[in-house]
Structures are given as structure tokens and as C-alpha cells.
Image (cartoon, helix red, strand yellow):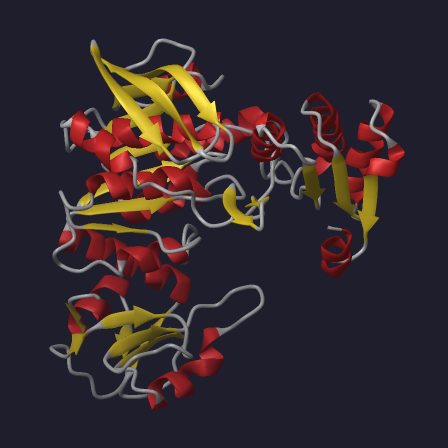
Length: 427
């Protein structure tokens, strides 16, 4: 809930008012969806590739909107005119960010952003008043709305930052002005918009390259771009890792397939046992990143370790449920080579008297590298001793099944489906 007046909003967005306007009127919230507008909120008519909020201005006003921010020169006593409503939303978020002035974390990376965000929130809640992105509100529209969702009591704001192209992270940084920048890792995601991993790393570095000496960058010491990131920022570096020497280091990692892990956290000579229900080696990295980041504002590591025991996987990210003795794991939120391999390793290490069945629909946005990455998944299926492969008949998954067959998988154990319903019937 925002704490702004119409006058403040007009000033923040640089808007023009053409008819009757009360600058002292209080606004209770900001919405870009006329279907959920509440009385006392302001409606911002943003415009996207497939929608135009200007079509819903009257509906928003009829449902109780106190005012509307609209592109153009439409007259009305409740209308603030701007040249670009998307930029107005971002400008308003920046104004509000400065007014509330919480401690702000920005998190980016090819994998692990949401889990790191969620774990960090768990670690700091109860110590601070914490707000973080809802669902996938991590782009140029969702992130400003997250900022505007703060109350005046908010002390810590945790912002996941997604991207699909160059310059997007820098825009989100300019809107939020983070105190701490966290980069989880760099991997092959969104390669349709980038020619190489180096270009992805360069785009991710936009989060930290303008951080000043009094800010902090939390970086993965095991990531192949660690030294590159260090060279791109003036901020103080806090590192985390498993293999390479780092400030927050995990030793004696023991993985419990689909059940979690335990490890010893080494920090400045201190050793603390960590137990978590988050499965997979990749989540050990996410936990390390969250602990390292949380320690900046809370140095009681034993307290943080205790809080980790309640952390659960985000929805559709190795999210498990046991139904009548069958372990079903939903890892369908998104798919890129690193996340698929991580899921396969968990499946391969799971001890069972029955079959390990892998259902695969393919991976998108890999550009010219799509074929080679789908072939690598086929090889990984063999190395993890998967009993059955069920693929949806997309180009990518068929490439994977062909490679699995080439590497020795029994053709009778590769099953094809055209629809989701077909997959259910096969299972």
C-alpha cells in the first residue's frame, strides 16, 4: 500500500492535469489491472505488445479508481497525462523507493533467483519488515509494482531481476537503486537473444557495475565468470561457494535426493551445521548466497541457520509430493540446460524399487545452440540411469530422445506424446 498524494504522484511522473485536481488527495495503492482495482487506488494505463490499458480507463474509474495516469491528452478531472505510461510507472516507483528508503537487495542470475530471494526473505523476516517480489514480478512492470507494494514500515526490499536482453537489468537497477547486488550464476538461458555466455555475463553484470564502494556485491566463487564480475564493480565483494575458497563456504555436503541436504558452513573460521529441505547441490549455492547476503544486516549465523530449516522449494521447482507411494516431482516452472541437468541428477540419485521416469517437453530460447544443448540432455539421461523417457513431440525434446537412443537407451522405453493428456495416460 502506497502512502502518496496525487500531488506527489503528478510530480514524480511529470504529468499534466487538464481539469479539476486535488493535489492533497491521498492514494492508497497503484494498479495496472482494471479488473482488480480498489477504491482509492490510482490506475496506470500501461501499454504492452498485446494489450493497451487505455482501453480500460473508464472501467477503472467506474470501479472506484481515484485517478488515472494515461498517455495522451484526454481531458478529465481524474486524469494525469504523460507521454509514456510505462516510464511513468517506473518513475513513480523510483520516487517511492527514495521516500521509503529501505535496505534493498537486487538478485539476478541464470538460475536460482527465486529460491535465493525466498530463502533470503525467510532469513530476514522477524528481524526486519521484509517485502519481496510476488510470483514472477521481476521485469520492467512487475518490479516497479513490487516497489509500490511497500508500506512505510518496510525495512528490507528483496527484488528478483529477470532479463531477456541487454540493458534490462540496468533499467531495473536504475529504478530500484540496490544496496546489495547478488549474482547467483551464469548459464545458457535466453541464448536466443545473446550470441554467447560472455554476452549473458555482461548483461548480468549491469546489476553491480555501477555499485559504489559503500555497496556490496555477493558473487559465486565457483562460477566461471567470478573474476569477470569482480573486475566490473567497485563494491565490496562477499563470495560464496563449494569448490573454490570463498567467504561463505560449504563443506561436507550430503545430498538427500528430493529431501534436502546437510553441509558445514565455514565462515571466518566458524563452522555451523546447516540442514535444509531444499533438494540438490544447486540449492546449496542458493542457500549460501542467501546466508551471505543476510549476514550483511544480521550477523547471528546460528539464528540464520535455524531459520533455514523451514525453507521450502518454490512452487514447480523440484517440488515433490508422494501419492500412494509414487514420488512425483514438479520442476516445470522453467527449463534451461542447467536446471534440467540439476533435476536429472536428483532423479538419478533417488533410491527406488520402481522406475525413474523423466517427462520432458523441451527447452526454449536457446537460439542456435538449442540442438547441442538438447543433445547434452539426452546424454545426461543415460548417465543418470533413467528407466523411461516420455517426451512431448516438440523439436527440442525429439532431439533429446534421439540422442538418448543413440547413447544406448532401449527404444521401447522412449515414449512419445502429442498432448499433456497423452502424457497423463502414458503415466
